[in-house]
Amino acid sequence: MTVAGILFSVLCFAQTKEQALAAVLKANASYSTVISPFKQTKTLKGLKKDDVREGTLYFSPKTSQLNMQYSKPAGNQLLINGDKLVVINGSTRTVYNAKTNQMMKTLKGTLLSCVAGKVEEAATLNKATIEYKDSDKYYVFVLTVEKPVLGGLNNVELSYSKKDGSLCIMKLTDKNSVTVYDTPVKEFNKPLDEGIFNN
Image (cartoon, rainbow, N blue to C red; front, side):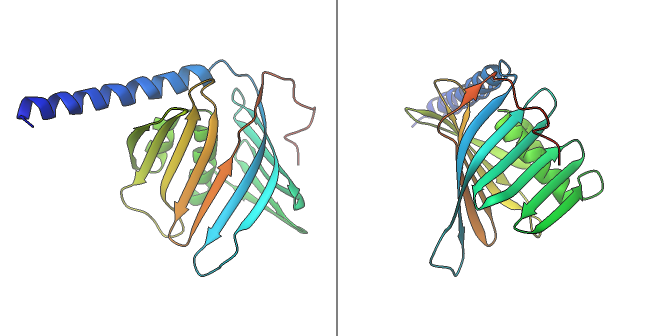
């Protein structure tokens, strides 16, 4: 391939990525709420059996509030409300302050940005590069962290529906595990139950 041909290919790739980022951002800007059942599959190095969990995700983009309520195992929860990040695992309830805890601040921002379709914001938070992969059904973005920190993410792969722009698959990879969230079905702009973000 000639130099001109290589340059043309690079420019087309960049344009395609920018168009995909804009399409996802625009679609998600029209949603006041998102409700979605989800399946969480975590694969840990050294373990033969995956940890599979299920539940329902509630999201308010305007207020940047998110609640992942688990039905399997029942009672578990991950809640983001303001600077508070609450994790309920069995009988243990842990509250993190995302204002003072840098790792939780990054986790909180990453989850909110990814669900809201703000891919570039998620990349900035994680100091990651963005690679775009096109497919028939999805806009796929791979965020690769340039210098992973201890306990942090190595990369994030996000697949957004070409039909409605919503996040359908989120794959989080760190040093020891891979966690995949599947959210195939959504309800948009539906009023949320009062107190859904209280805990």
